Length: 258
Ligand code: NI
Image 1 (cartoon, rainbow, N blue to C red):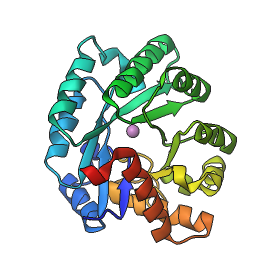
Image 2: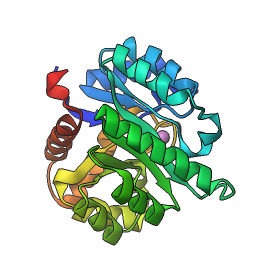
Image 3: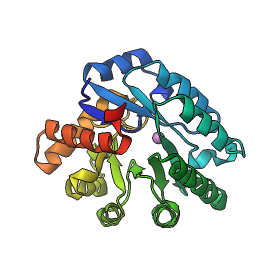
Image 4: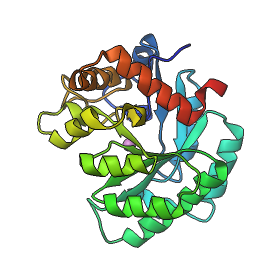
């Protein structure tokens, strides 16, 4: 199957109001491939099992910044075993820094982020990164510790200037439903102006549904509304945005070998 869009970040296993099988079918009908991140040291096993069941699905293993307290000495070992036994695990994520909710364990977040970057380097896998109110630290840590993994900033929330700085470092920018929100001036600027070779699409469902579903539960197929919106901003066709972002993702994840 030639994918139409690769949705690089969807927590489809966390949908509550939408039937998960329906959501998978909706995506499949439109040739949308879904990549599912994990969040805690325990749900890496859940994601591993979940994605095995569906042909249009891949996954990341990683511990999310707000869940770093679940990270233990055996977590990287567990991840390594999962990766070795499931070739549908194609990256490390979601990992990163989040200073929005709680700044009290910044140092632990940094430490676990660095360990997971080094692990991604060792496994030679891309990194799917969550960064909220922590842009400068995220970039500084990546510059210092990331040797050979392609980095993706998921649900990018920085300025255009910062996006350009990231692109200069070879970092990819993933955009989701936020870009369609009326007040998301920065995200629109980023979507319109970054080099298209560094753009990726996602939904981050069940959160952040794009217009016209804003406020409702998001689902992976809605990534097409993100593509449509960015296409309008850039004055190109939706197919063009779908095609190039799919090529970008295929290059990052070596999809053509899978
Ligand atoms: Ni997420």
